[in-house]
Length: 101
Image (cartoon, one colour):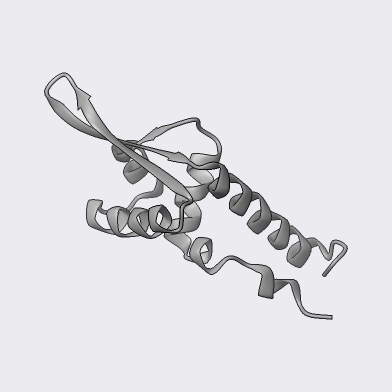
């Protein structure tokens, strides 16, 4: 039998990406600034990790305007929600010794 850690999604596993996924999992949509302030990272670091998640198909990025101000909104895709749910299940298996561990 293999250890469940082998089932951890390496894309999500980075602390900043995990924080992004967790924040988006609880919301229908989140604003870039809200995410930046919530997970306490710089614009450039957040952007870098969002690109990785978007490339993987886990996050959808929408750009638009509110008045004259440019805004960026992020949402988890269906694939991203599944991946996050699977990731948290593997963590549960590791931490709780659930079946499959």
